[in-house]
Length: 598
Ligand code: ADP
Image 1 (cartoon, rainbow, N blue to C red):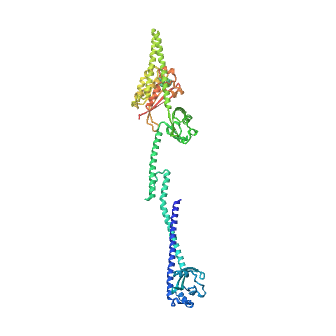
Image 2 (cartoon, rainbow, N blue to C red):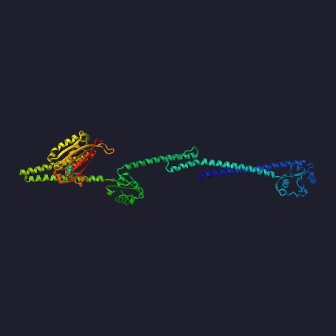
Image 3 (cartoon, protein in one colour):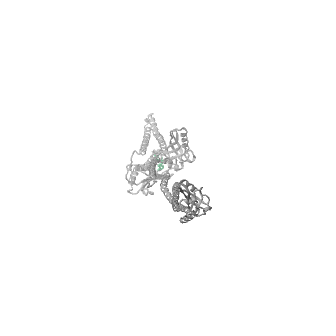
């Protein structure tokens, strides 16, 4: 962690440390050198003073007056605390302030003497074995008449100077240490200031890569790092914008896909189901979660076998396929399937299958063709009868008046039947196609039922069937009066037709509370004490042309369409109809209609 910061701090500390160390070393050397120079200057001055203070001049040198120089050496040596040595031109030591001159070896070979002879003054620095200390020597030649007669040598212990230099070094090193620590602190601070914005930018970049496009860099820097932060912010804003646009497009796409009535299944290039829209879920009765991500041909995807075969065919041939198939999911369902392979240049991207549930359409088509067959069949019998009787009449039967009358009567009855049949077919088709709009108005039920019963009075009387009603007065309902009358007429006619002589047919109507949030309803019950309907036929009696007993229906003049018309009319009133029946005991048709139409 913070590697860059540590690296930077170390680099800065090294640079500062080296610079300070180099400066310190340079300073120390300079100081030592200037110290020596000052010392040399002062030694030179002191030798000159000694020379000028020698009362005998150069002459004692020429004489090699050891006693004289021993005395002088003692005086000068003790007066300024330095060692003074007088040396003859041949190197013989004539006097020395510290040591007995006679015991000292020849000094001509000494560096300072050789330098003094050559350059007029000589310096040397040496370690003295005698004292175990470093000494600085300075020698000046004494001349007489142009030739060197001797030398005056001054030596001084460098011990003090060395100590001073050591002191200076320790002060310098402590100073350096303090400077180094300060430099370290400063370097760390500088590295922190430099790397902190970079860390912030890195953090934001990481958040952006984790799809947090709202993340921004907040920096006060106006330098290159500040500009980098601004660039990152601009990049995040642009990404946010683009992502927003992508999401918007995606939402639109999913909105369209999910609200399509067609089922859409997309299979990726790897054969895995990539997308399943809501309609496809409904058609296949399976959830998208259970299908997406699975291979389309794996049992886990649970796609109908026929569809899998078709998809495989499309992949094999690489071409569009349109087909119709019957699948069981688990109920029988007719599907129209369009499969289109997706490619981009030479790359295989998968395929899209669009499913249409055409079960309803196919059922309707079947119903239509069945209806046409049924109608033709229903029409055939009366037409054949009319034709047969007319032919017989023409063949001569019309000459016999009684036979002719009977035949004509039958022809009339059959044509009546035909008329009723055609009337009912037209009525049903009108109701089904919703060509005849309903006109809702408040209807007084007791009045309507009373009048309807009156209309059927004579028919009921023929069979001695008692008609009765139980309806409270002024019970109103919002309905289409004519259609409601037709419903009652059809049900009451059936009641009279399918009730043996002496029976009862009753109509009752009452208001009932709707269940839950449902509005108030009116329940109308038409019941009879007739022959009843077998249990097995109950579910089918509202189908067109369905009759329990064909012969009986025909003889009663029924068309097989009455209940079908009733059911449609009830549904147009947003109501429901059901039947309860006991064989040989009677039937109850229960209609529930909303009190008010919305
Ligand atoms: P139909 O014109 O033959 O009466 P409907 O559609 O009115 O045709 O009735 C269908 C069939 O339902 C009838 O053929 C009859 O078998 C049966 N059905 C209808 N109403 C009754 C009833 N009240 N009692 C017994 N059977 C009935």
